[in-house]
Image (tube, rainbow, N blue to C red; front, top):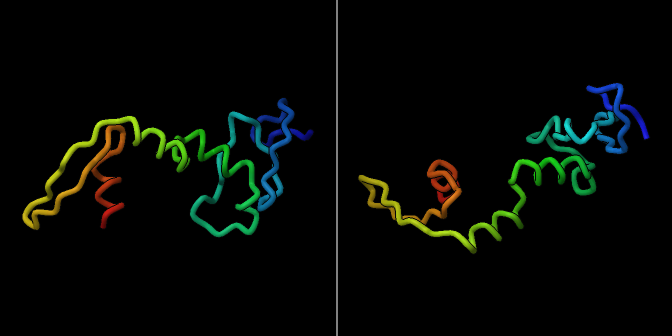
Length: 97
C-alpha cells in the first residue's frame, strides 16, 4: 500500500503503471485515456474508471436491452436511426457516422 498522489493522507493499492503513481478510489481516472498505453489491457485504473463513468460496454448492452428505442430521422438526407433511452442523439449520430 502506498499514498495517493492527490491525497497523501490516504493509502491505496491502485497503481498507474504508465505514470508510476498511486490513486485512491476518489481519484480513479485514467490520466491519458486517448493516448496509447502498453499497460491498458491489464490496468485496473482504466477498467474501474470506465465502470465509474458508465462507459463500460457490458453495462451499455445491459441498459440498451431493457430500454425503449426511438426512431430519429435526420433531414435532408432522410437518414433513419433507432436511439435507446439514456443515449444522447450526439453519441448515436457519431456512432452511425
